[in-house]
Length: 79
Image 1 (cartoon, rainbow, N blue to C red):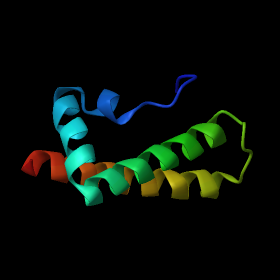
Image 2: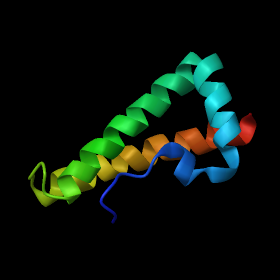
Image 3: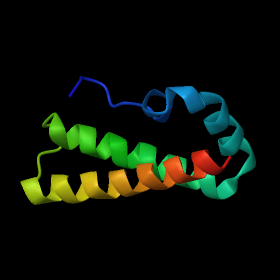
């Protein structure tokens, strides 16, 4: 875990162009990407202690983030 949350283009470095294109042309993708970024920031704050919560809350947020990331991966594979 680093001091900064990972960005979507860091998780999918070979798809940075697709990510940019889909964010500007596909409303569903753009909303999903924004939801992922928000979850990513929330999880990062929890993991770094900036937002103290119970362990299960962190795990639940991580699962939601992973689901969003999996869906993004599916959409990128189809693009």
